[in-house]
Image 1: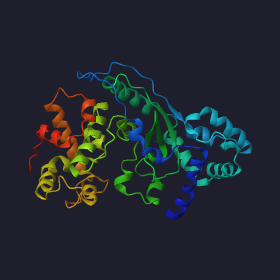
Image 2: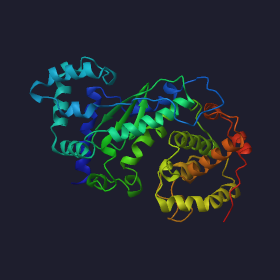
Image 3: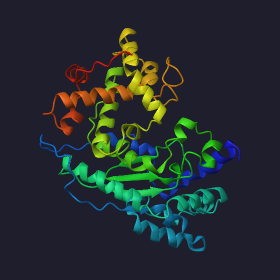
Image 4: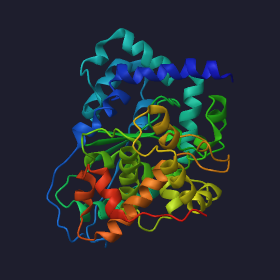
Length: 353
C-alpha cells in the first residue's frame, strides 16, 4: 500500500476529533495544566511500599465494537461510558459525525490495524503490572499526588501525534504505535527505522512516564539555550529512571545497544565539541535541534552515534548532580530552573577518549 493511500485513510483518524477524543493540541498545554506543586520530604524513598491498582481503559475495543446499524444510540451509550473523552456531549446527534465515524470503524485498513493491535494486546495485564510498580515508586516521591486514568486508543498510525500523551489527570496510549519494530505498515507510512525500533511493547510503560507523567512537575518556563534544553531533557530521563530503577539505561533513553555503547564511550568527545565550538549557551534553533531532536545520529559525528546526544549528556549531568547533592529531592530538582547552577554543582567532567 502506498504511503499516500495510508495517509488518506489515516486522515480519517481525525474522526476522533468528531467523536471528541482529546488530540495533540491539548498536549501542547499539558505542561501548564499538569504541573503540580506538592511538599515532598527530602528523604525520598526508593523502596516500593505503596500498592496501586492501575487499569487501562480499552476505549478502542468499545469503539470498534459499536453496532453500525444503531450508531447514534451506540455513540450516546459510549459517551456515558467515557465522559472524559467527549468534548461535545451531543455529537451522537450529528449526521456528519456519524458518517465519519462509520467510515472509520468499517475501513478495511483501519480494521486490520485494530485487529493487529488485538493480537498483540488481547489484554494489557503485563503493561498494567509494570505501571503499578512504577506508580508505586512515583507515590513514594510524590505521596500527595493523585493517580491518573489510563486510556488506550487506535488512531490509525497517526505519526503527527505522540505515542503517549497526558491531559489533565488522563493519559492516552496509542497501541498501534507499539506493534513491534517490524510491523508492516510502519515502513509503508515512511517511518524511519530508528523510530520504528522504539515501537516495542517494552517501551510502553516507560513512555507513560517520560512523555506524560513527567510534565506534572516540570516548570512552566520553556528552555532557551542549548544548556537549558539538555538539562530540561536530562531531568525527564532522570525522573523516568527513578520510576524504573531495575531497567537498563538504554531502555530508559530507548537506545539500541550499539548506540548506547557509543554514547557511553564518546560522551566526552561530544561534550568537548560543544564547549570548544562555544555552543553551550547558543540559542539558535538549529544548534539545539542538532543535539536534542530525534534523529538517526548526532552531527557532526559518525553514523554510529545515536541521535539526542544532548539528552544523554543532560541525563548524565543530572545523575552527577543528584549524586553529589543528596539533600536535593526529586521535586526540588524538577522545579530548579537554574541550568548553570545545576551544571556547576554536578561536577560533570567526562573523559574525552
